Length: 332
Ligand code: UT7
Image (cartoon, rainbow, N blue to C red; front, side, top):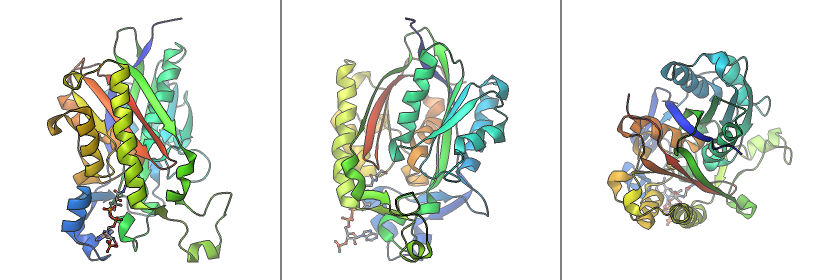
């Protein structure tokens, strides 16, 4: 047995330049800036435009920046895990495309799919490779080009989602810091409420599936909302309890950015004020696997060594979870 933990030693995000704001959405579907803002907290989201531009584009940009920031040579990286629900292709893994695009010649890589909880599932998995002592540098990417599976004639889904991603570097530490605890859950009975009907092996793509608009996110919003509010709040409270953390011990809640009302309910349950809640939903919307690393990237300069963070997410599957992180470095 060793006492190794995995610590985050750097974070980098990437969002594409095109801004799709609520005003533009008003010209596409029957909605209003007022409705979207009050029901979700979203003002704008980013869209990856252009031919042949997949999720790997987002991942490659984030990983390039991460390598530079952490002074890491690409050949030093042992493993890259990419959490995504919008892979460039059904195969090969987007992680392989990102590794190839960033020169990670010695890394093995694979994708992991847990919808909006994907980054937390991948962070947990990556940290366990570090804890064995066998792997020294693991990159965890969370990225999604949600615009590739969104129906821009469906006002109940197109207003929420956007494109973006981020990446963290994990390295070993013998100090009492880093990934301290994780709680992950799935409930496959959630499938009817949030899924994509066609394009997989159960219902392969045909002209008919395209005509029936089955290659887009199908979400029964209010049902998903109810499950999300309860489970994200519960798992966040449970991880605090298991680690004897009181609300005053928490420096930051890092929530999945699906709906500001879900985030508020989670913070409320944890007993923490809005000043401790990372928020970027207003500018990026819901980037699925990208939301949590993008938050860490946006707030990196405010994080101090020793800060207790609770990362929490809920998403399709259903999947949900929380990760307790003790931040390992001061702003550089
Ligand atoms: O990322 C992880 C998983 N996803 C989530 O966590 C998302 C969870 N769900 C939600 O965030 C919310 O359910 C939505 C934002 C998707 C929808 O908000 P809601 O408050 O649950 O609305 P609703 O679906 O219950 O619809 C209420 C009303 C309906 O009108 P009627 O039937 O009451 O007349 C909708 O047709 O709001 C209408 N509506 C809209 N109106 C203007 C739905 N979308 C829109 C829209 N603009 N974009």
